[in-house]
Length: 61
Image (cartoon, rainbow, N blue to C red; front, top):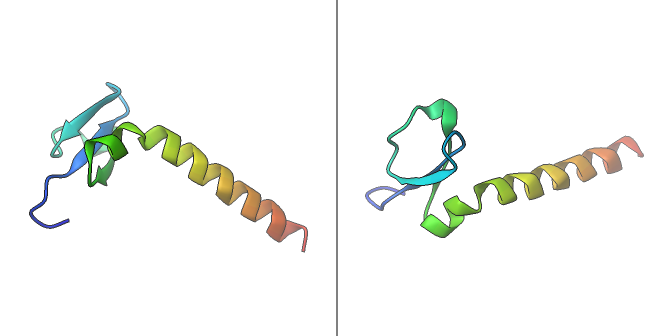
């Protein structure tokens, strides 16, 4: 991401931050756009569900 602006989702406040201003313990990211950061929880949920399905499929083998 270099010199581009980075966006972070703050799980404590539920807000998007431009640049990393808060403790890393409350941040998800970096994201390339504000919109991506705003969808951080949805993206994480979707990714986790996909991984859980992959694990379940693997266990059935």
